[in-house]
Image (cartoon, rainbow over all chains, first blue to last red; front, side, top):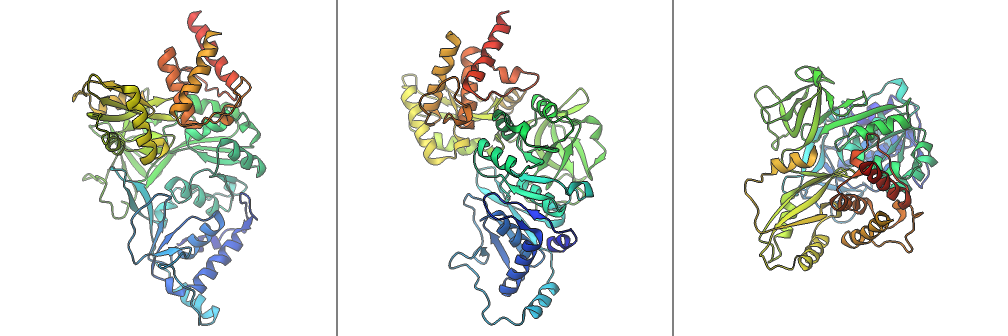
Length: 438
Length: 86
C-alpha cells in the first residue's frame, strides 16, 4: 500500500510546525491531491525532492509515492542526479510546468488513482570516498519498523533529524502513519530546540546520543514531558542511557541500531547498551543477526534491499554491516566501523577524504586520520602527520586548519594533530579503532 | 585555584583552534552552550583537558552529569581531581 492510501486510514490530526501555522494531515492530503491534479505530466516520472519545509515536504511525499517512478530525497550536499529527473519544488529549467488546459479535476483524479505504481525511493548516503551515493528503498521497506498501535496516537514527536535522511524519514513516517503530531525541531542549537520542544509539549523524541547530551546540558530537558525517548545514529553508551532513564523513569527508552546499507534496523528497549546476545542466531524484529569471523555484525533482512551493489551478501542472505562488535557478559556491544569511518555526533567522516586535504600541504609527508573516543560527541577526528625533523609544527598546524576549514565540513576537521617522523605501516586502522572505541 | 585558571586558559586556546568566537566576558556563570563554543569546540575542550590533566570525568562517570555553566564544568573537574587525590 502506498503512503497516501495509508494516510487515508488514519484519523485527522494536527501537525504542529515550528514558526508557522500548524497543518492537519487532511490539509496535507488535500495538498498532495492538488499536486497530482496540477501536474499530471509528472505521473510515472522520476522526481528529486528539495526540502523546503515540513508541510510542503510531507505533501510532496504523499503526492509522489505510488504515482511517480522514482523519488529522490535531495540532501543539502551536492550529489549527481540524472538529467531526466524533475526537480521539485519547481526551480528553473528542469521544473515541471502546471498543465494549462487540464481536464476536469474529477477526471484527473480518476486517472491519478489508476496510475498507482511502486515508487523507488532514493536516499543519499555518503560513500566510502566521501562522495554521496544513492541507496534505493521501497516504501514498504522504509515503513517496516513503524509502529501503528493505538497507543502511539497521543504522541507528539519532535523531529531532530533532517527528514530527507534515513533517520529523519523514520521519525516522519512514524508520526504520520501513526497519526501522531510532528514538530520540526531539526534547526538550531540545543537551546533553540529545547524551546521548540517545550513550546509544543513534545512527548516523543528521537535524537543522536550527542544531541541528547547537548539537550541535557541545557538543564531544561526535564521540563519536556517525554514519554518516549529514542537514541540512534551513534553508539548509545550506558552512562547516557542510565541518566535519561533516571530523568524520565516512567518513559519508554529505546536505542536503535539501523543500517542504511541493509535498509533495516532494530530497537533495544531494556535500557542497556548493545543488545542481548540471545538475539544472535535467531530472528528478531523480522531480521536475523550473527557475527562473522571478522567480528562484524551481519544482518539478514526479510527482504534484500533493492539494487544493492555496495554491500556484501553471503550465500545465506546475510549482509555485512561492517560494524565491529564484541561479545561481553551476554551483550553484543558496538565498537565502531570496520571501514575506519568516524562517527562525530552522528555525522559520518571518511578518513581518506580528510587525508586527501591534509596531503595537499607540501610539508605533510604522510597523513593518517582516525577517530578518537570522545565523551561528548562519541568520536573526534584526529590525525597523525609525518613531517621532516626541522618542521615548524605550530605554523603547519595553523596552515592545515586553514586548508581544512576551506575544504571540509566542520565535523570532518581534525581536532588534534600528532607529529611523527614517519607513520608505521603496522599501525593499522583496525588497531586504532579498537583503541579509540573501548 | 590552579585547576580553575588552567581550564579557563585551555578554553581560550581551544576556541582559537576550533575557530569559535567566545563571548566577552567569560565568567563562571557563563552558560556553556551560549559561550560561543559549539558542540565540536566543547568536545575539543574535554579532549584537550584529558591530555593535559590525564582525566576525563565525563567518560569516568557511571551516571552522566552534564554541566550547564562554566562554573559547573570546572566543579566537575575539581571533584574528580579531589577524588583522585583522596
